[in-house]
Length: 154
Ligand SMILES: [Zn+2]
Image (cartoon, rainbow, N blue to C red):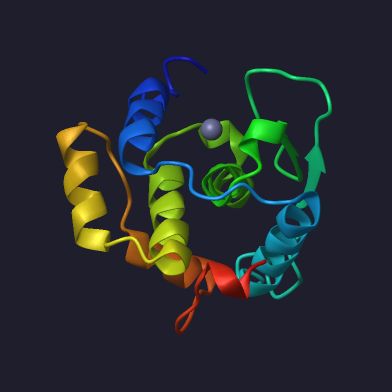
């Protein structure tokens, strides 16, 4: 896994700098966000509503994670950015790690919902030497159409 997931640390560094955590969400808002993402991305799930759920971990710990179906968040990870990161793992498949598919999917989510500038994000990823698939390709795969914002999710 470590060799295939060679971009992991680079991506964490990029997120730390360019995808700062914005607002802290309540448990209900986290659940609502994942539920709505499941609906919006149903094209990816072959027309069925997506299967992802969210769980807030009570014990303090370093990482949030997902097994591909359930997102387990630490209380510090109850933010849109962490949820988009874990949700992208679910969409791409956890076995793909933080490879180019994952980054393309994450980019599609944050440009679509957080209004991040696609060109600027791509530029900063290049600066961090991170390989990524086209976010437009992922936007189509996810079935994200029209305009949405975070307000549509929570
Ligand atoms: Zn990750």
